[in-house]
Length: 526
Image: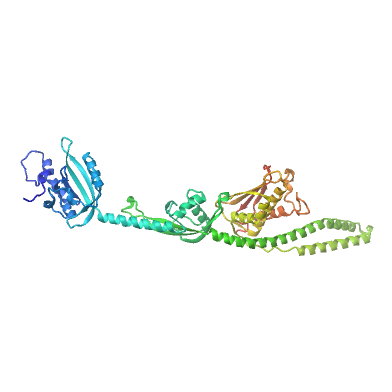
C-alpha cells in the first residue's frame, strides 16, 4: 500500500463528506476548504510529527523538491537535506522548536533531481489541547535565485565601493538637500584634515561662491561644472588646501515605497575633487619669485616718487612765500623797489619751472585692471614676502583666516601694496620695542557685502593724540632720515579707491590694531 497524504489531519476533503455529522455549517465548510487551500498554496508546506517524520506535503512541496507525497510520507525530513549544511544549524533549530518557539533560517537542501538549492524554512510547533507539541509545520520556499541576485548586487556594490575608495580623488554623492549618500576614503580623510564635520557643505559653499549668485539647487540651474578651483585655509591649524572640483548631475527613481505606483525621480550630484595643493605651491613659488622682482621694481619707483613728491612739497612752501612777497610789491606799485620786484618775479618763475620739471620726473604708475581678489591668498603672499624679516626678528604670526571668503573686486597690485605697507609698519614698530614679545595677529572675516581684515601688532603703538594725524602726508613717528611719512597716506588712498574704511583701534593699548573694511564690489561697478 502506497503512503498518501492523510487529509484527515485537516478535516474532511469534500462538502459531502460527513454531511450529516455534528457541528455548525461554518465548521463543516472549513473542514474541507482548508486542505484545498493548503494544497493550492504556492509556498511549500510540510507537516511532521515530533520526530520529524513527514505526515503531509502540499503540491508546492513537490514542485520545489521533486518528491511526490508517496515518496516522502513516513520518511524523515533528513532525506531532503544536503551535507553542506553545518550540523550546528540543525542543533539550533531543534533547541528552538522543542521549546515551543518558531524558528526561521536558511538550509541547503538537495532535490530529487540531485540539485542543491537554498531553502528559507520556517518551523512552527503545533500544540494540542494540553499545550504540548503535537507536530511541526514547516513552510519554506526556494530562495536560490533570490540569493544569487543578492550576492550579485552585494558583489557589484562592494566592487563599486572598492573602486571609489581606491580612487586618488575625493568622491562624494549628494542628494538635492546636500546630504551625503556615498563617499570614499579620501573624503573621510578630509574630515580630519579640514577639521569640519561635513566637508561637502564647505565644498558646496565655495562652489556657490565660485559659480556665482545665480547658481541654485533648482531644476533650471542643475548644470554640470568642470575643474572649478576652491581653496580651504585653516589658518594656524594647517596649510591651505586647493582642490579642482567637477560635478555631474543625474536623476534616478526614488526607491521610497510611497512612490511605487507614482514613480518620482530624484536628482543627485556626483562631486569629484582633485587635490592640486602641490601644483599650486609650485605655481606660487614661481609666482612669488616673479612677484619679488616686480615688488622690488615697484619699491624703487615708489621711493623715487616719494623723494620727488617730498622735494616738491618742501619747495612749494618757500616758493609760495616768494610769490606772496612778489604780489605784495606789485600792489604797492611805484613805491616798491623795481629791482627787488624783478628779482622776486624771476625767483617765482624759476621756482615754478623747477617744480614742473620735478613733476615731470615723477614716474607714471600704469593703470591696473580690476579683477576678483582672494584676500586670504593675497595676505598669505604678503606674509611670504615678509618671511625673511619675520624669521630674523623672531616674530610669531597668529594667522586666523576665514575658511571661505567672498572675492573682492579690486586692483591686486594696489591691494597687495596696501597690506605690505601695514605689515612693514607693524614690523618696524615691533623692532623698536624690545620689551614685549613680537606677535603679529592677522584675521579675516566675510559677509555678503564686505571683507574685514584685522592686523594687530605688539609694537610701541601710536599716542592717542596722534591718531588723527597718521594719514597726513610726510607725517611720521619714525626717524625722518629713513621714512618719508607717505606710507599710511598711500594706504588710505587705496582704501578710498575701494570706497572702504580703515580704522585705528583707539581701545587697543598693546600696540596697533588696524581694521580694514573692503566692499566686495568695486566702485566702478565691476
